[in-house]
Every structure is written in structure tokens, then in C-alpha cells.
Amino acid sequence: MTTDAVPSDLPGVVLAGTASGVGKTVATLAVCRALERAGRTPVAAKAGPDFIDPSHHAAVLGRPSRTLDPWLSGEAGAQRTYARGAEDGDVCVVEGTMGLYDGDVSTAAVAEALDLPVVLVVDATTGIESVAATALGFQQYAERAGHDIDVVGLLAARARGGRHERGIRDAVEGLRYVGRTPPLDGLAVPDQYIDPQFDDDPPLSDDLVDAAARGIQTGTLLDLVHAPRLDTALSLRADDETGLTVAVATDAAFRFVYPSTRERLASRAAVATFSPVAGDPVPECDVVYLPGGYPEDHAARLSASGTLLELATRAAEGLPVFGECGGMLALGESLTTTDGDTHGMAGILPIEARMRDRPVGLDHVGIRAREDCLVAPAGETRRGHEFHHSSATAAPDANYAFEMVRGAGLDGVNDGVCEYRTLGTYAHFHVGSGAFDYLLETV
Image 1 (cartoon, rainbow, N blue to C red):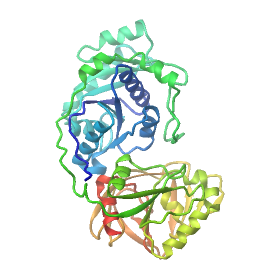
Image 2: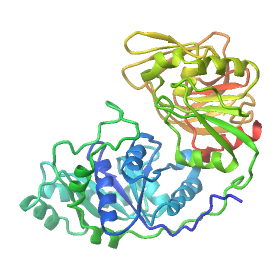
Image 3: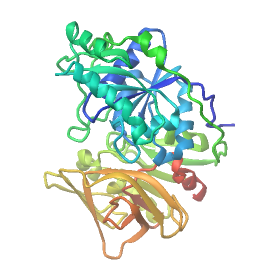
Image 4: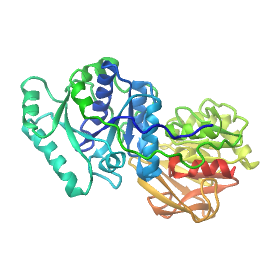
């Protein structure tokens, strides 16, 4: 029997930033490496819906990094997802999103839902006492913002040693100083909105991660972490095997899958992976899942791939196919890159997509099913996330499965184009939304 209930005694800490770009990912990797040196087995996690930072965590640690987002999975789902980290390690480092209090689903909200202490990451490039003042201000703002959280520590990002570090440490009375990351050349992770990097290679060399870890005061940090008080009771359907086979596209073009989703699919069905970029045949299966990713970077190979042609044939024969974001684009008629090159895609869904230089949709989304479809029954709402640099134009007679409650979708009003038993959405779903359980049960 398979369940997703695990002991809720995994100690952890949230590394929150004062803003985006202050060095949270580097700090997370440095803290994890320092914990490894101290004989611990750290696991990382990410607040918010991001796919890219968790890929960096996993590449450096060799362990999955889970997504913790109460909007996507509900508060109880986020708690269960956190608790599952105990299967891979003995202490969890949660990287925040944006600034501590920013966003509808903020890092502060995640820390509160998980009952975890917060260490604030402050960019200390040019400040000393102002770094401490910033941290203390963030600590005091929690009550005004209505969040029941404990900001207990400060990590100075890009701080020099010696007098610079001593000045920050001595000024930050009321918070524990847990160390610094140094201002080294190359010690930075590409901005995901400008230069997305999503592959199996670590974003930083081992030497750079080691150098960043030397400034972390591991003993102080371990004094601050604690095990949260969580209710991780069984979720519905966790142990119901379906006997189905799910074919999941897995290659450089289709990478955006939450670890929790992979785990749930594997617990309820047999999973067969295949690579459309490599031209693999579609496995014998009951349903096909094409995750999001970067099909635009591989559009020429996808267009020449026999996989998409086979998918079109199988879809016309009634095989259920679900594509999220980039997966939806691959199921459409054509995809035009930012260079203006147009490539034919599978031709299953009546949409033509074009890549844009800036994000077109970037938000948590809510969508309500107009009719029964692969991931929801009529009238039910699903929560998800969208982050796409493309726009998709649907044929005038396109059939839309969802109306937008929140978010951009395809045209601000609709999401979810249907044809045969194929569905494509701009929305990405977490398993906690219920979309994937419904998919298996519907098939």
C-alpha cells in the first residue's frame, strides 16, 4: 500500500529575502552544503510555484526539492509535501520567493502554514548597520502584516569578511547572525526571468558552493531550526492504485513537473517516459502527459520528430492526451520562435502559438470547468500557476474547457482547448489541486 503520510517531525528553516535577487538561491545552496559538512542530510524546498530554483537545489544536492505553495495544493497539501522531505533527509531548508511579505502567496504565508522559523537573507554588498536595520524592520513588520511568524536570524549575502562582517553581526541585536555568503565572481545563479537555466547540471561549481558554505555558522543555524507542528493525515486517494499506464514526456523540452506529481503518478499508475525531442515512439499507455518546459528551444527537432505525428494519430483514435503550457504548444498547429521561424507541431489542438520577449502570463490562476474534461468535472474549480512567454491564438470554433476565475489563460477569459480526448492548458497543476487524481480516475 502506498500513502503520502509521513512523520511530521522534519526540522527546518525558511530562508527569506528582502526582495528578489538578493541571493536566496546561493544562500540556500551554501546552507545545505554547510549542513552536509556538519554530518547532516539536508533537503531543500521552494516556497511558491517555481520550477527552476528547485532544479538547482536537486542538481547540487542529488535529492528532490519539493514545491510548497498553499495556493496550488492547499495548506494541508503543502504540509504533507513538506513532511515527505523526511524520506530524503533529516533537516529542510526552504528557499523563499520574492521578498518575505510579497505576493498573494508570500514566503511569510508559507512559513506560517508550516510553522517554521525564518532567517532573513539581506544583500550586504554596500551596507553594515543598514543591513541590521533592514533585518530588524522585517522582523517587526510581521505583526503589522498579520503573520504569525518568527524572524529569528540574519544571513548577510555578498558580505566581506573582517570588519564588514563584524559590523553587521554586532549591529543586529535581537536576531541571531548565522553567517554570510561572500561576494565572489561567478557566485550567482542566472535570473530565471532573464536567462532561465533548467537542466541537470548544477548552476554553480562544487568549488563555488564550498566557498559560499565556509561563511555559514552551522551551529547557530541548527540552534534555530525546529520541527513544525503539522497535521499530515492521509490525503484522499493516496493508496488507490489504478492499474493504468501513464506516458510522460521527459526531455529537454518537457521539464516542468513537480516532484510530488511524479510521486503521485508513480504511486497510482505505471509511468513510462519518452522523449519527443529524440523521436521516441509513444509508449503503450492509457493516457499521455506532456508537461511544460521549453519546446521553443527544440521546435525544429520537435517538428521533424515522428513522435508528434504519432501522437496526432493516437489522439484522433481517442487516446487521452493532456498538455500543460509548453506541452499544449507542442499539441497545437504551429509554434513561431522569437526569431520569426515557424515550425509545425502535432496539429491536434486548433491553436497557433508565438513566443514573446516578455512574460504574457505570470500568476497563480483559478479556472472553472465549463464541461467535464480530463482534469476536472463540470463546474469544479482548479487552482494552478501560469508562467509563459508565449501567446496562443485559437481557431474561432475552438472548444474551451475552462473559464478564467483568475489569471490570463489563453485570452483573458478562457483556458483549456479540447479536441478529441486531448486537453491543453496554460495552467500548470500541482498534484494537490486534484487535477492528476481526476485525470487517472477519468481515464
